[in-house]
Image (cartoon, rainbow, N blue to C red; front, side, top):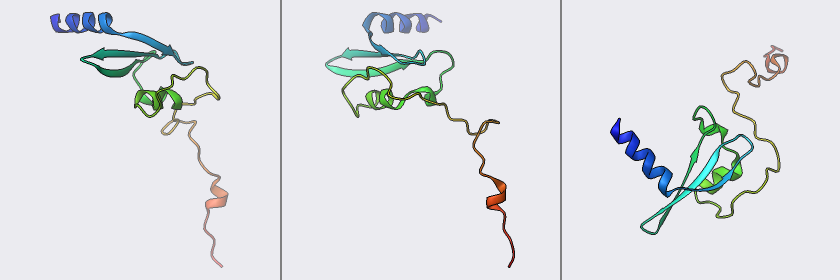
Length: 97
């Protein structure tokens, strides 16, 4: 338990808030020994599919420009839910000639 308190103290002390996305995720930067680390605190349950594409690029050092506003809304991955896309079964049926 003491380890978690020490870790939380170090995170709070060294982090700098960079931005927030439309889903409420907060993005931070930490610089230690001249090395920049980028990380996110999720709003709610930690789910990597909840990160918009522009922020994903920033997190993985693909783009150094911090995203300002979303160009389009991000939709979560619906695979495995009742809202998942299923093609029309009539088009997929096989017929014999």
